[in-house]
Amino acid sequence: MLQLVSRILLAFALITFMIGCRTGKNYQRPEVLLPTQFNTPTFSDTSTIADIAWKQFFKDEQLLTLIDSGIQYNHNLLIAIKRIDIAQQQVRQSKMLYLPEINAGVTSQYSRPSDNSLNGLSISNFLKTNHVENFQAFISLSWEVDIWGKIRRQQESALAQYLQSNEAAKAIQTQLVASIAQGYFNLTALDRQLAITRKNLALSDSFVTATRLLRDAGLVNSLAVQQAQSQKQNAAILLPQLEEEIALQENALQILTGHLPGKIARSATTTAAFSQQQFATGLPIALLSRRPDVREQELELIIANARIGIAQANMYPALNITAGGGLESFKASNWFNIPNSLFGFAAGAIAQPIFQHRELKTAFEISKLQRDQAVTRFRQSVLIATTEVTNALIQAEKLKEQQVIAISQTDTLQKAVANAQLLFKSDLANYLEVLTAQSNALQAELNLATIERRQLNTVVELYRSLGGGWK
Image (cartoon, rainbow, N blue to C red; front, top):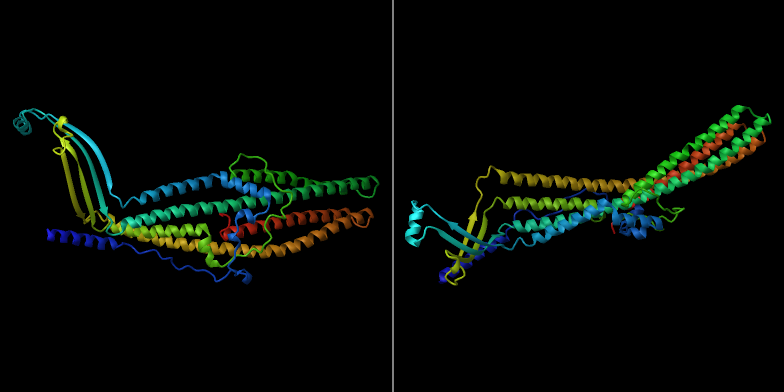
């Protein structure tokens, strides 16, 4: 008896030691290339606009309403949220992998062998009947001991997939918030360009009227009137073009917010589009934790790393324990006659795969190659994230310089238009000079509106590229 107990304890000690072994290596983040800071030294502070929730970052009430609607009804985001629910169910299932599988069943069997067969003769001599009945009710369980840590790697993979689905949804939301904000700013810029065009169209109409009066007075010829009309038509043709772009942009925003095509309400001005704070970028290393798409790729790497351990464990011996019991009887009347109808069994087996057409070895080698792919994708995502932030900073700086020049140019050309009209009325300038001044002024105003739209969109892109928009 003492020897039996010693053997059992030794077996449990051996199993416990083997369970402590885990195939595969624990995840370690690979080295990635990152600058110590972004382009501008003043942005090396650890604070970043990515930490600001979108409801505090944007200040335009109409824009906030659009973003809120998009987060509630955008179909891509809703699909991503369902992926989170699916992954959560998989995590719950993985927590049960340590428990044995339990099955229950009830069976009945009737057999009528031939009277001339060996079975028939045996049954008739032994049971004094020509048929056999068997009734059984049982419960069975099977359990694979997690010797090599395969189940723990499976749980690790399931948890990483759940976290990855969360990061994927965050990445979709950051892009959604940025797309809605940029679409909204495009819309307000088009409104501004439409107003500029209508103002210049009215100015051109006044010049056409004045030119006709001068022609009737014999001071200019019909060519002057035709040139003035052509200038007016150049401005007029912009109106349907801008109205078309406005309608298409409105419909694009409606798709993002999960609504049918229609009009979009917007503020008359975008001067309060953002909160008035310095657009700090923080340190580049923070992108690894703040950018959802970068985190998503790192979690994919964690999953690939766990799958190596699973594939490796499949190549090693598996310890399976089975047991069961129930009630069994040749007669239904004795089925529940306890304890005579009781039966039970228990078994343990260790199975070592030997030859399976190299399937297990191939799966293991493929899992290692897939991990290498995941490392490359992770590094690529970090590189892209760093480049996007750097590009946004360069655009912000250069657009500011362009804005200063464009404002000065617009002021100059507006004064030139007024002076040209006065000189034309005093017969000190010809109609071509007036037309040229009006054309240049219109183009300068439209260009300024475009630059200011790009400035707003660049700030949104900087906010998104730093990982802002999912809070």
